[in-house]
Image (cartoon, rainbow, N blue to C red; front, side, top):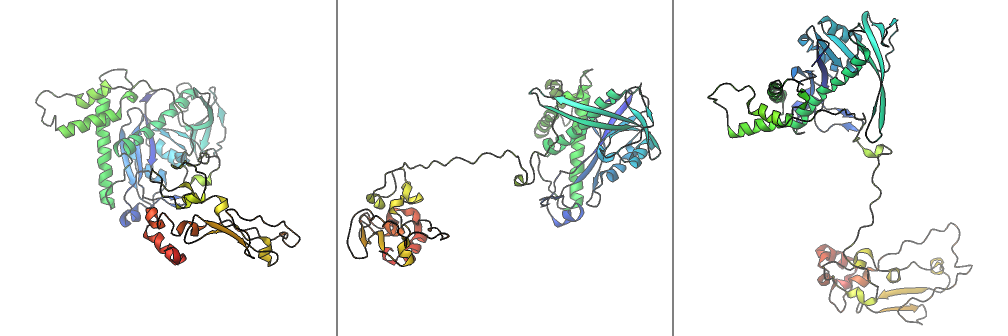
Length: 459
């Protein structure tokens, strides 16, 4: 791509290509440290210089764990710059020293400045920009408010402060440079094709540095060959934007050629377009629409540390396969249902009337009549009896508790009753239907041992 006769290129780094977690890889690549600890895999530090139009690579370099500064890696690629190039840079490359090194190669930078940078105003220009000086380097500052509105009414806005050495406001208008800076994201599309389309998010295989570097150079070579085939095909149709060429189509066409071993020894004249080029031209993408995306973290390291993450509401109550049944003493000896499931009360506990309630306040304090609550006998769990301390009274329901008196009322501050517990004796003892282990096989041998230890009479 060219702008006012200048070839536009871009610098950027890639830190998301993962390599195997071996001792040798950790020694030279290291792991990225997040807020809650180290990453699971070591990650490569790849720096590339790419064209913003065809997304072809002009050069790349790999850094180690000691080279975390992207500017230091980009300095290795400065010899690739030539006069007549316009270098698009993000905020990580806005240092005055690095910009001066780019100018020394004959290229012109167009970088976004950090929000903390406040350059002095030396002269205002007719297009709204102004001249300034950064450590002896004459630059031009362009300040702009960029706003985008989506089809659903969503609106985002941000402020840009661009630094460039293109000082002529008539030949290089401020609004044209502001729109051009959006092309810097083309190198992100190149990394997307490398990281997801080619690799598919997979981890590389080599366990040491020489093997990892060999894999990376092979991937970059394959990427560059596919881009060359795509550009050659697009150039056969003048006026076609290279953005419309599909990298996925080119990759699939190349795979089909490789697996079929076709075209290894061509017999006719050289076909510049080739099978890959014809597949790309047959599946040209529509013209790119103006898109935008909010710069925000979509998946935090831990969602529980972030408020307002729109987590789903608590899940509704689970539906059990058994239907509710009215509790009767006969259901104590019921086995599995026709569907093979235990009765509802066997998993969730019987109704409150069959549970062992807490002792009365009088019995707890040692005064007043003591009441014995229902308990199933060992011989027949379907029969329950209620008796008081003097042996009077029997029936299928507990005797009414005495009215609270001054001695039986719970004193202020007294601990609450313990939660009711399931009457396992009614469920574990033998009954007319046979031992519980034969009726409920799901209890297993572990359940049998627990019953034998806790209730020897029911084992």
